[in-house]
Image (tube, rainbow, N blue to C red):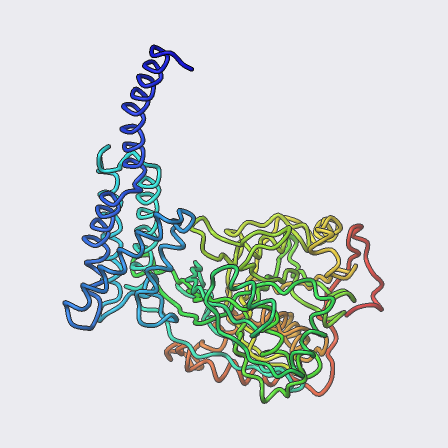
Length: 553
């Protein structure tokens, strides 16, 4: 049995631990922000900055809107304290968008009320004040906690993002209807939008921005619904009959993935009133690949549904980029026999924006955590052609929504990029494409089409006309390629058809010239195939050796 002295020593040690440990634990909990008083202070900071602006933007009774804003701010603080992984600028922007009335009209990009630009400016100022209040907290206010510093950094990043959105909302964006084009003897219909209305200033897209709606199209009862539940993502379901479900399971056998792709909700053109820059803003939700198959693929490629009965609910967005070599060639790639539509011709770079990481590929996100189509295109260029391209190298040239015999309701983000490599160097480098993600998708022959020379004349170069006639009548050209070529030459087309017909006459508006452009393109469609443009060359991937002329596309 322990003697009295040992017992006394033990009591003394326990008292010392209690005396030091309890205050230390209390202090640690305090500065970590995980206690009721600090939680209340954080919610108060948010209510007095962001919440106050949100309440002023609502259209309901003042008291009701204040209560809603107060409740929303409290819920946001509790979510952050419970799970710091949601404390990113992207998650904060999604939370902000949820305060709006319409998920297709994101509050963080388009503002609200009678003066959207002013509402965005007010929100940006509110987030700056929120960041400042967080940093001003002392030790007893939890200001030394890493969590508080993270919130302040997030608030600063969101304030910058909202300030940029406000600048683009102040300027007036040009209005232009979609350019409607039929090709392949009328079986494919292309609706091209947001094209350059000329080569002059103010006509090119200078920036791209994205809003992300956390909602996913899935097939009810399938793997895609289970994955969405695992991700905690709200869903919209595609309901299938038992026979359709069996067909879908057969279609998905052997597929590389049932990944999560972007679903396009809205496209808007914005202009910065100070710089004159144009920005294309995409509102993206999510769609599983199985939902795309079920709602957008015609006949045997999908579930056997006739084209007229497809709803195109998934509204998938795909990406295409037309590389231009240093010696003046457009890079085209023929699909291999291992992918759907084998041996058809595409722009040199095609792919998808990854909305959910899968093995070997992470998110295609920007520094804020938002989906980034340009980053995805740069990745695809590396995978398919081993080209070293950065997002800033890529020039967005428009969008195209197409309907074909095989597919309906797909939108393509069209772009181009310049590379410092010659055609021969591109062909050699393409042999080092990613064997897992890109090498097997492209044929062994790379096609190079000579680009029309750039001149100050408004007359159309014969090579440009020859290139467009070729693609509009080629049955083996994917809509991605035809629309990319049309968008790439949009400035020359509009400069030509917007020019005054008589000396002294005014220059036509974009809308006045649009019927002329459409009529010209329709006039190029013939009843049979057209040979490739003069100067087209085919080079072997990996070696750069020329292919026989008889094998021209």
